[in-house]
Length: 401
Image: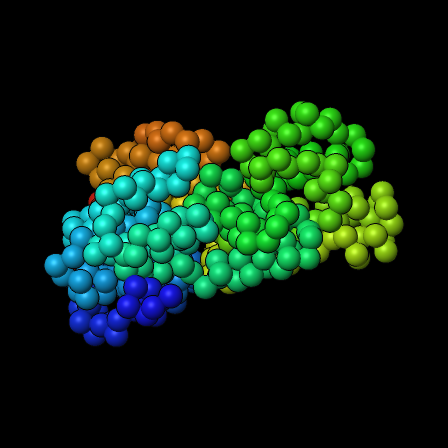
């Protein structure tokens, strides 16, 4: 593909957009927390920030490239294939810059309004092979911000399909990243995939491998999460495990072990070695954030605040870890913390509905508020959340230096 229509390494305009990026996404209170070993004490309120949090390299790169694209093509129409990342503040900022966010349908994105002279940004999650090929056929400029960790998973899935293994993907079948990953098997004739959401669905795969499943019921259950014409009798004979990069690492490893052990139990160790493959494809940033929040929980905070989009898989995973040990509130944005009413709008773990809670933060006595944020949450929103927590307890954030 000519370089004039496909870009993956930016445009060399980092210096030109750096000031604007800094103004949009940095946070004074976050810098202060870092300088003070991730602990900030004000009165009888202590804020503890996880040592790994917020924007990861892949997210920073994607957002920066979007800003560079606007700078490079000031007079062209620019489209974005879905959300650049799962953060409402960041996507709203790009929309305000005149970047049109395309909605996804069952058959992919609607590119009917895209013309050859337009520019389309591919998000950090990547796009399906069908979407990519359609854009290439249109002849428009493509700016590819797909995360390197996602590309590593694609290579793994491709190797499975090439060698005749079904790609068993631990993820959410409707998630942009998982859809893009699953599509990689179509590069090879007979390529197959199956997406399992959790250990419960993985157990259904195990039941079938061990001869306890019903073929029609299995196909019905995974109709939206498997390759066309998926046949469990044929397609579960050779399995390679991969995962959406932002899932709970421990669960992804458990899914792989469960399936591998099942194959060995029924057919023997030699069969397992020849018919089963697994590889940990959780990205390092996701793992680091999960490890850091576990370390923070060991400090026994009074309450945990997790900041990130409600549709952000890695944020949901962080909130799930926290909720096992301490009262936890997953907020989409710092504005969810209502200082005047002392309430919080949040999405309880395992639900899809935002709710409002009062008395979430003790108003008297010494407390420790633990804080972390998903990989798509900018520092300024983390800092704003700290300020709102302090203000809720009657502490003027401006007094913190």
